[in-house]
Every structure is written in C-alpha cells, then in structure tokens.
Amino acid sequence: HCYVCTPYFRLRFLRAERYNPQKAALRYCRCLSVLHQFYGDISLMRQLRISDLSDTEIRFFKDGIIQLLPSRDSSGRRIVFWFFGRVDYSLVRFRRRIAIFLLYSVVAEDIESQKNGVALVTCVLPSEDTSNLLSSSSGSDDNKSDPNILHNLFHEESQSAPTVLRGLPVNFSVMHLCAPNEPIYKLAVSVLLLFVGKELRSRSISHSDFGS
Image (cartoon, rainbow, N blue to C red; front, side):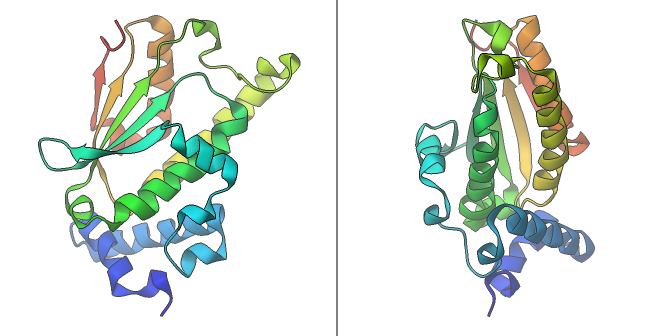
C-alpha cells in the first residue's frame, strides 16, 4: 500500500481534528499537497527520511535553529524550539523544508502529539546590530536592503506559512513568543504573528522580558 493511504498515516488527522471526519479529510489533503510541493512524489510513497535533505540542509539542521527538545512540558507535550534572528534569504527555503521534515515526519509519528498537540517556543534572538534584524545577511551589499527582495520574501512566507500550518498532522496547542522588550523585536514578533494565522495567534503567549 502507498504510505499516505495506510490507516496508520490517516489516523493522525482524525486525532488532530478530534475525530471530525470532514475536518480530518481536509487537513489530510492539505498535508499531501504540502509534502508533494516540498518533497515531491517520494513523500507520498514513504515516510520522509534524513537522506531526503541536502547536505546544506543537514548542516543547517545540526545548527539547532529548529529543534525538537528531548523533554516535554508539564502537560506531557513535545516541545519544538525555533530560533529567529537576522533573516538570511539564502536559508529561508532550507528552514521551511527542515520545519516540514521535523513536524510532518518526526513529530507526527508520536501518538501523544497527535492527540494532545505540540508546544511551540519561538525566540527572537538579541542581536548587536538590530538594524539588520529584518534585512538580509546574505548576498551582495546591493541586495541586502533591496526592498523588492524583502517584499518577495514577505509575500512568499505569507502564502506558504498558513498553508504549511493548516496541513500539519499535529496541532500546535500553544505558541510561546520570547523576545527582548524593544521596539524592533516587537515589530519582528508582530510580523511573525501575521504569518501563523488567526487560530494559532489565539493560542500565543508573549514573553517580552526575554534577553533583558
């Protein structure tokens, strides 16, 4: 049988939607669309593997920018840690594929996460040069502040982030947003909240004393 057609795979969507078959079917279709878009036909035939990532993506993964913590929160939920700092345009697509690998494959295999959801902790890292927090740190000097690049990135992320979130085989039960209590970081958090959608925004908790 095809991997995505097995009861083992499909049951996680029923659990995520509290056994509502209509919502589960919609989430299932969105998940298949995301998997195929970012990993191709092979993602519909078997579970994603670390070998599906490129060498560059694996190095990025090992840096720990996105990671699944070995411990759980007080409610027994798995914790996904996601660090944000300066935006490097050359790494945005790597980060997205790694997040999909981690959430759609690794976390989604945990039955408790399917039932109870996952806790997401995002940290906007303090930077000595806060003027570059929302600008590119890669490419030529002429491109680092190119408004067209920033606009294209914002548009791409605003389109892809909600799609990826709606297709998740597991739910984010809560999202903790940690950032220093400074205007530039508050702006970064506001932009992040635009991407995650109304449902996850309603479950978000801000911690503004982070890094102080």
